[in-house]
Length: 283
Length: 266
Image 1 (cartoon, one colour):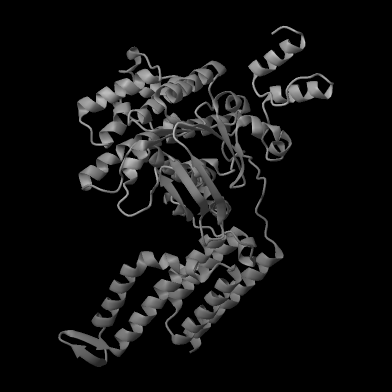
Image 2 (tube, rainbow over the protein chains, first blue to last red):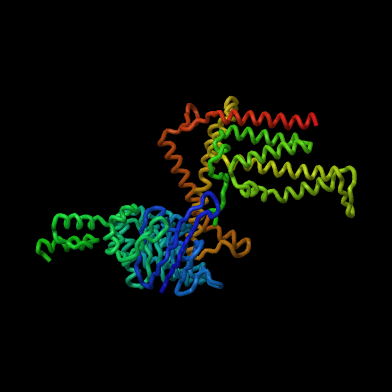
């Protein structure tokens, strides 16, 4: 029920020579508590799409409903919507501005009209949720490492207590350890707090590991919508869109071609390990 | 929203005017501007109108884009027209209270309005058909003679083209930062003047940091490619006059002659 998009179409620079269709008749529904991955090559419209969901970009045509209400309906407060549907952008550098970490995280709740004490309480909660240790709270956000900046940026949105968390490539430019830490934290938010998650990523491995459902965007259209296993079956079509399946899926297919009885729908390393061990007769 | 701002308002279509050398267009625009100040007879304006209409036609830029620049001078236009209309001495046509409207005044006001409008539209044609980078290239080449008197023409042109190149980048960056802060409940529209100025801080701090970072990165990248200023530097696309540029210069000469002719003869 939570988010429903109907026939979203968005055109940049309408009516000029630079006209460009970024979204073309995209419809979907995201129920409460789902962990959804969004994939698509650069320029496929995924960033534009997610910015529609909290009213930052107004569709040229089409409708968006949050909990059944039209977000462009009369008297609907976009500010309230934005506190319910939290969006974390790709680069934390685009939002960090305060003198220290804690005041920066307070910015969101303060904008919601909370008192300084309440805001601070929310900020502390959010910083703990993303695993930022207390010793960093008084530091300047600009002195932090890339991964820590990211955490502070996510905390900045979490402090508004959103019901839905949208993350635009939260792991771009992070090392493998930092990437796993951030994604594990996101999964924890999903599992412990029941948050609805929308994760944009270029890593098929991450998608196979974390997402319950995948939306595949291609040239502004929704190309596929289903579970990761269903979608990675179509790895040939994904390749034609400049995407791919996880590497282990290719290995599984190669093993099958050689006549070995492994499952076709392997998408994670763990599944591949189990399947291969089974072949050797070791469960 | 903010993406709609176009500075250096280049309109990307393919036309004869787009393909002309930027120096030719700079020169043509100058000729046109000078000629407007020479004009003092109805026939001069007819010639200028024909010239301008032909240029608009050849540029293949839709007319609404041409006249968009006029919005900025509406106020100036109104003031200069009313001053000319009411404050010129001469043969009175009618008067309202102390405001006298004279035959000479009407003439002056009409000419002044036409002059200002043509001036803006004429220079719009140049900026609409020339990319900012071509324009700086053209300026650098045309002002090359100033190097003799130790004016760092190349460096100034380089600064200009970098600045122009950065405008769309910074506009896009501003858009992203605005969105990131709006996602955190920021409100850039409502509130009084002080409130509005305060709400700019979360926008300006990340913007400045990013601008400085981009500037250092660019300087580093230029140095890594051994940039050392204009001395002995060649261009990937050197400006070269084509036959159509010679034709254009001929047209300018004929036009200027016609304008001078109407002034002297008629």
